[in-house]
Image (cartoon, protein in one colour):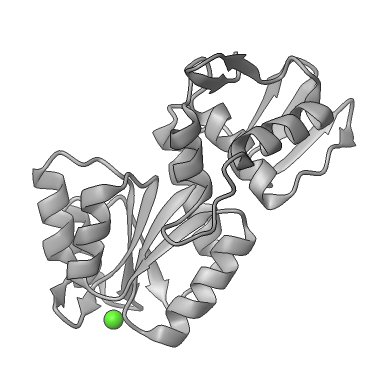
Length: 217
Ligand code: CA
């Protein structure tokens, strides 16, 4: 998933960035409202993890602004523990969910995945694709109960295609899902990952639409 992390405390942001990237997400970090706004102006995200107290204002301002513009991206607020009123204000402003600070990394990852599934229109955590069984909550994949191991980038690509099943995703849309701003992108990275996935899942698992992109039928 492409995630925008809006968090001003550098240590916390670093730990989150490291963790979320290790899980295969493409994460952009904004330490304040204006950088978050700039990122939202030029890229589409699958989720925003939004701190409330930021140096140039409240995260709620950004949230209300995005909702006013019709942006329906899932927003998870970071609220102080025991601050019920903060949570209510956030949910009323259009947030989808909240996590209490200090962050629990595993909880954040689980909530991101849950919102990603919901946004793709299918909140179920397990389903079948031909002879493959996919455990989306655990990010695991099986054929005949034998696990097929994917790297985090391979999984991110697979999950992006799966979330848009039946629709063609262009190479640049897939790059957006795989890479954050400033990441070094090899020109043929998407082709390489698609080819590796086909090697693991079977040649027919991912189809190419020449000149348009890729899809899981
Ligand atoms: Ca803060």
